[in-house]
Length: 166
Image (cartoon, rainbow, N blue to C red; front, side):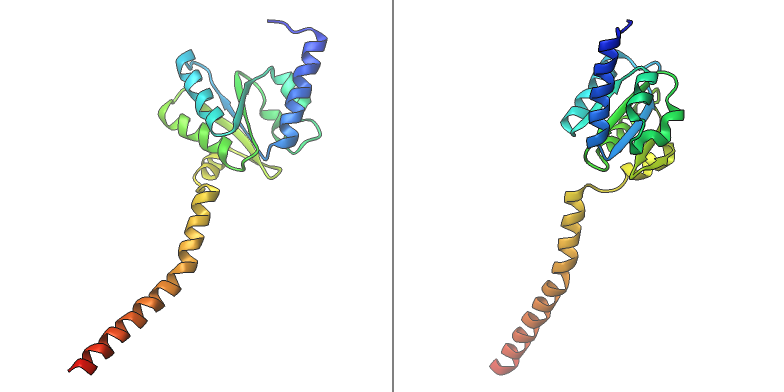
């Protein structure tokens, strides 16, 4: 399907806006994936706040020119799906988790914090726990000394109570 000039400009504008808002970009090759599997991937992405797009690579390269995602412009060849996310790890998580169960989706590259990532870098980024989990772990660490102190004081009080009763 060929796009006319105004349609191409609209696509570039839309992707430029996505790139300006996103923290992370993940690029994956989708050659051989069925429509049903692609629909599952898109649904997972949508529910996690990730925007997945299949774009003409020339339009994608033009759209990311001047952004932090320009560092992977040379990787934009072949049948690719582009995952943009405002959340730092959501795009990497969605694509990496789907790639675990579907070997036809091959992670090609990614960008986080203006730095290019290879496939292993994207997988490492995906293995980082979510913000909520990290906050819960931090709260647990902060609460641990206080709860241990309370247990020790409770044991001392119980021990003194036993000796006073005897």
